[in-house]
Length: 361
Image (tube, rainbow, N blue to C red):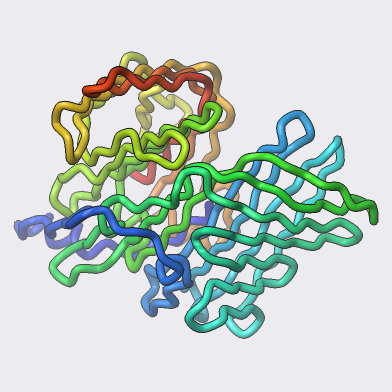
């Protein structure tokens, strides 16, 4: 993830005694995902960013990663980065293209993005992904198993001016299509998942750190995310938990008890970031307080640690490092989650992916 930092005015205000700005998260009831929730927001302002990230798993044959990112960072607005990767039967091809605002297109009123070698189109009930790299290409269709989901209205409002961050989750989809490898077309099937988010507030202005976990087992999924606000904003948990089975929501919550059972301190970094590598969760369902969730998450292995400043060019690194020291940590994590309700207990277990992203102390 590329990091772009703008000065956090709220930090200055806090230092001279002003109250932290308010946060309003996940208001109202659950909203049905519509095409309008997937169309690029195309906001102005340096902090605006828009991101689509989707993955597919073809079992032993391979996998797919697809990303579109729109940003206003630096000179010019609505710049696009389209990148991704397909691995199939031992062959891997990739694409990556950076485009100015006049080099990519989005159709008004529809989800239909054409960004260099990649396209994304469709509706919440059917997403179509294509990409081309030399003689290799893909054409995949995602059809939801678990319905697309938003945490209530899907929005967090930051500050008195109510700047928006917006979230849509695709917990689990069936995936089918054709991947052409060196001119040979091959049918593929698998499962997939993804997220689409956009914000008027850059993540480094929003958060000191973020974490998320995703686990999938057969037709069940478990997903959690939390954003810890910067001192510019009131210290309110911005979080959600989602568990699905088939096309049903088994559990959803916007608060929980998070208890680290194993902590890692990053001695390589000057900020000595602390990462809960193993932890437990306890929570009550947002609409049914008798529906209880408990989860246990145990580190299996560290997949990667990335000091994000090192991946930036020197000019960008000089700007960002004045305000943020970002490092990301990614783990394979064994998990067991149980939801107790009137009809019994639902369980999901396996190995999932856990990511923590520190932006500053």
